Image (cartoon, rainbow over all chains, first blue to last red; front, side):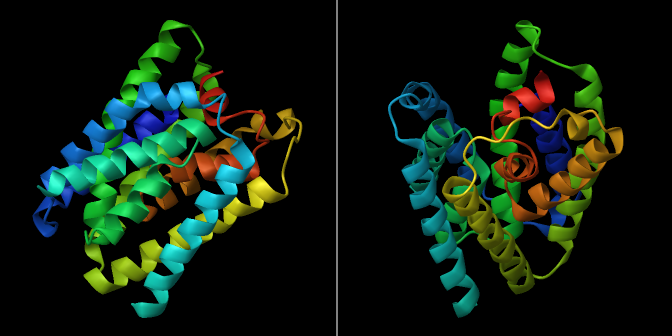
Length: 75
Length: 176
């Protein structure tokens, strides 16, 4: 995460806030995501040196392609 | 009890992001959509959650005086404008259209991630590109728009990773 990403996150959130009446925000999703991310962050930071980066990257990429591909086809 | 599933999604995404150095937004958006949230809500939730994580990390980099303000300005301002536009766009299209749009972006970013891990290993930093203000403006604006409409802060860094040498990971690029 970086300072530029922080600005982007803030601006995106402001963009969604402006349109909040059109959205049905699920606050349990916001809180849950943040909570899970914060709790896992220190563990994830330690895993950086242990986990083989490329195989994991390839596995995650394939999973994301399959999940979103299936959703597109069945949409 | 839904928040438990969301917390699980957040921790999985953080785990992957920690290990790969990127992909929080990409992973969490995909998981949120799988849990049945709409495209705009998924993106809004991811970004709201990310305000906290990026703030914490931004402050720690700022403390260590890691920030190059010139690069930050050139990336963050067009990035912010692009992100605002992307958020507005995603909020205003209808639900099924939003789902198709966000799934397409996530799918493409999945291919970017795959490409990067299969083919790109260790390309040297291209300082000419990083020092080119127009290039940074373009990178920030497109990254911000795709980021907000694709529902993932990580996507922006993925784009940076795609166009930028991987050796300069996203923390360094904007905060050197």
